[in-house]
Length: 250
Image 1: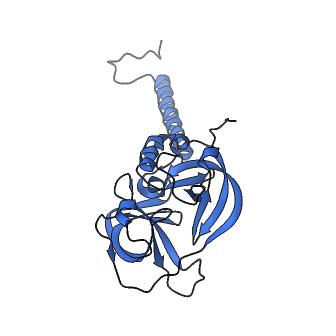
Image 2: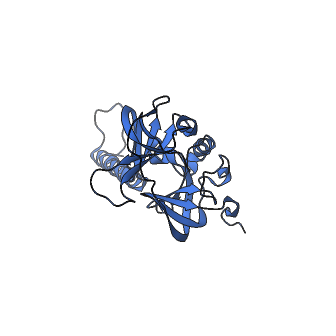
């Protein structure tokens, strides 16, 4: 009965006290191990950014098709397909920039906005009313190169959230947000399953999709067949939306 502990006694029996100390230490070590396993097992957040509140000035040539884009000249002597950095343009909130850039196609402009970027891809959330014409020499349009048919597996996301406004900006947890963004005119991206490649999606005519065309296929694993195009540094995937199928579909 020497190991029986009575609560009002000043000390527990030696054997019982030693057992409790070992048990507490063991449970503490187990908790640390479990915490480390959970941390290591978490999906790492992408290296992306939205410079919220940091408004910059941008200057370049406006493209409005297939999606609003600003071409900013790079310094130095470069080839015709490397002479410009391309910034996708969007409006504040879950809206595309079509109305903001209306009438500016092919014009050299100055605008203000907040930078969004991820993995070398860049976007600007344009400040409404900030686009103004400037005097500059005419810019030669970049040619579109057809690189042939491809088959890729991955998922459709909205470019604004994926490039930095949300993190993570893909997967089922982001489906509803992405659906509203694409319905608002945000350009759609296709991201490969390994996350290494991204393609700006365009229709079979090379133009932008109507806003709800891709709604049923957002944020689910699918395989797409299409024509790979390249315009400057931007990879485009031209697809026929009628050929899209859900996983397991015939």
